[in-house]
Length: 607
Image (cartoon, rainbow, N blue to C red; front, top):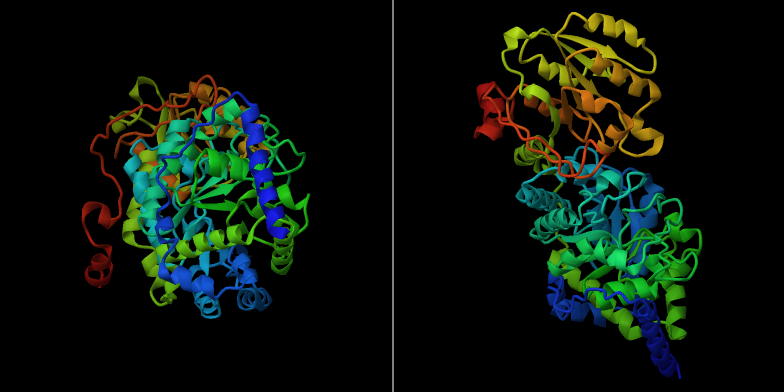
């Protein structure tokens, strides 16, 4: 009787999955000839077979459950994780904040306590530095989107994959393949490669292939596209009102291309999409038509389907822990991320099996996929992470060189009247630098100082009188200003206050000015009049390396190559970016950038 009910229910789910899609006249591009995720070759591996034979139904379900873990919390948190690993045989952990040495130590211990080796996951949109102290933070995806040379994106993914693997991580919850088509998006924004679907796809694929070259599975997110929303699904359920034609032509494009190239995993977002799933307040991550109907059946994805975190308000506001896990599994997901109630989830899923909503055979197959992924990544081998020397291994000179090259290639020159950049004939200029923002003395000014005599000033828009500064600048025929302290998100106007806006306009009109904006490109739209600067540089981020490279660019140590990955307004559009050549002026670099070994310099020559 249960088997008959299961068959009937399965038929119903299939019909439901396609009903919304068929009702539309739109033809979703099928991917029946897609390149399958490489780990699927191990679905019938002997280790997978032997493991499955020794797992109960409850343990097979638990293999699909991943819980969040931290390396900066107290012993009670660690005890809780150990209990879940020992008692329920969960499939994996998702690490968040902490430091690499402690995470490695905890991973070694958790693995030693697990009946089935754990799969370890982490968000690494811009490398381990996104989550862990004392590790390298590579440039944001938006910054990478400004780089023309896609091979550098591959090298970035490859290096991040190397670092993840050395830390015992098997699943990289990146890259973001959302298209940055809404400047008011509170959660995607600088995490996206840009506004053009083809460039997002190309750069995303390079990142994916780089990571997976290290046998770490990449997870493209947030399907079917979180870019055009103005609500953060961490705090509420965003509604995506676009019809199927629009989704197919734009949001789905990068995911379709990533599937063609063999991406290992795809994360499903918590979005309400009425054109596909009409049930009110039912997120895409819990929707049969979205997960099974669209992603798996229509688009042909065979890899790991991962939910976005199940403790996010986009789903947790509507369904309690345990129930939400069951709904996600029924929808077609393979991995339930950040489950809040493991025993409750197991019971609810068993209940769903007894009611014919999902079969035992389907549970076994999804468990088999997770186990196959563990084989391909080497997670099945219980290799202990070496703690000694770990920080050195994670922070190599090659990685630092790569990071510098990425920043250098991304800096975008948007205005260059009379070819003011690079500055020539230094003897003809009386130059002042102006730090605009909360910092009195910036790295930008320090590097400018290395090239010629410059007098330095600072102005904090929130508590200093601009007229005083303008009076001091009158005696100079060139002012180089750096705007710092901006925000990356649309809240608070990207950090642009009324006083800052008015002040920048006055500074530009008062004389010959080069401005470097250390922040998000959308901040430019909040600074009307900035297009009148003689020279305008955008670095995308505000850090010491961006400051250094902007200063070097201004004096011609290298040329400008970056292009704007988004459209900001009528003055600054996607694809803008003036190209210049360096003038062989002195540049500042790491020894490795010129073929020297910093270790030899420090340890032998210095001594």
